[in-house]
Amino acid sequence: MGNTKIFASAADAFKDLKTLGVLRDDITVMVGGFGLCGIPEHLIVALRESGVKGLTCVSNNAGVDDFGLGLLLQTRQIRKMISSYVGENATFEKQFLSGELEVEFNPQGTLAERIRAGGAGIPAFYTATGAGTLVADGKETREFFRPSEGVTGATIPGHGFAGRSMGAKGAGTPPALAASHARPYVLETGLYGHLALVKAWKGDAFGNLVFRKTARNFNPMMATAAAFVIAEVEELVETGELDGDIVHTPGSYVNRIVQATPQKRIEQRTVSK
Amino acid sequence: MSLAPISLFAPSANTLFPMTAATPQSALSPLPTLSRDQLARRAAQELRDGYIVNLGIGIPTLVANFIPAGMDVWLQSENGLLGIGPFPKDQDVDADLINAGKQTITARKGASFFSSSDSFAMIRGGHIDMCILGAMQVSAAGDIANWMIPGKMVKGMGGAMDLVAGVKRVVVVMEHNAKGNGMKFVKECTLPLTGTRCVHMLITDLAVFEFDGNRQRFVLTEVAPGVTVEDVRQRTEAHFEVAATVRTIGV
Image 1 (cartoon, chains in turn green, yellow):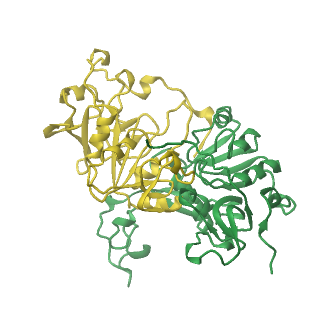
Image 2 (cartoon, rainbow over the protein chains, first blue to last red):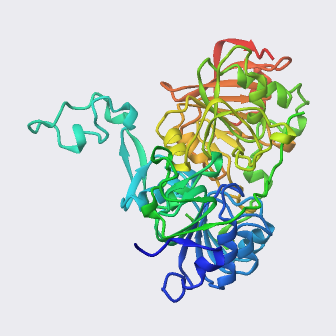
Image 3 (spheres, chains in turn purple, orange):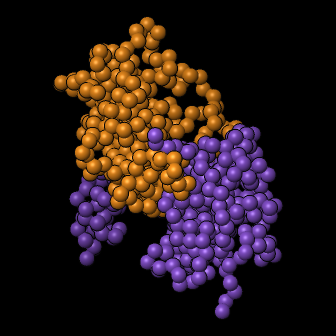
């Protein structure tokens, strides 16, 4: 039997991380969630308590002033945020405007795909998102056909199937699209963290995870895109109790797992009459 | 892209929303513009049965209230839901079920949940039929700017750049002019772009313009009740064509 992945609390799961060399100043930490939905509440508090600073946080949003990543902004433990939208946080705004906090804005789909790519061992990819905008500044841009338009299987102008040059034996038929149909794509790089903190609904002792509704968001990709992954779950069951057909994240990605009851704060409570 | 606040400059309102030299905007009399609900109602006329649609925040969200009866439209939420339902009853509020504006919502029958990367694969892969979104500026070439004003706090582009780059049909809904009659439908966007040559249709509170992809220009097809083509011209910096038959917006 290997060592157990189960820890009694978020604080316990963090206790020896510095000794192990996982937790240090200036590392990159992925933190799951969209707004306050599906954030690893207790792991964020444990990260704050650890006192590490100079962190680069990859997270779609930055929490609110007194909850989520806002807690680490208050204590000035974050040096840089890589996010797509950071609207709801006054502490953030103050530190950003004073130049204390660096921010790298990514289009949300680019952010999600950078994390997915990083976890899948893909160092870079091309996307149409952001071509011709500030986001493309300083990045390589080149033209391709839209894959959904490449009816011959070609996406590279002047080339047949799978990018092989036309005319070569077995290279496929030339694309029917005119080169003018091509459009610019921007080269974006994969993202990989030293540590990822994710939140799931259910998990088992092996680390298999199941997410619930829109609390899934960035969590599954982040679980694949860091050297060390800690999951916070609402319900922890024995290995074998989760149906393998409904597991979203296979347990091999998860190093540690903690059961904790979340507060689940709501940002915009909107009801119908 | 890294943004240091120090590099942001604060241009005057005139740079952001230019006035035309030809017509002093102050001389123009106020027009009967469409209300927010009427704009949403007009945008809803673009929906088709079976469409997969993403609605932006603000007026576009109101479009959901005007989906024609009997029409089956599936609303996608970028945070990982296909099949947005109505807002929940108080006792049904679920913190794990929100929309892109972080509002609590419900999921309709047949809805599905997925990760953010699956959601944006859906958006970027061309699997969404239409998105309806707001804008600060639209240019004559179909460029759009809707995420950032230099000198003001930048909150980020969220999913807007992905939507305009990947969705099959991009419909913009906005007020025709900024406060003080500043221009929003312009020759070239002066604000940082969200996407280039991507707007298929522009619906303003004065008129409707269709982008003609072959000729690479907008064509005025409808005007608001009580508004003339000349009225629209006087309040527009961008060049546009006028359709042979200009209809009145029916809302």
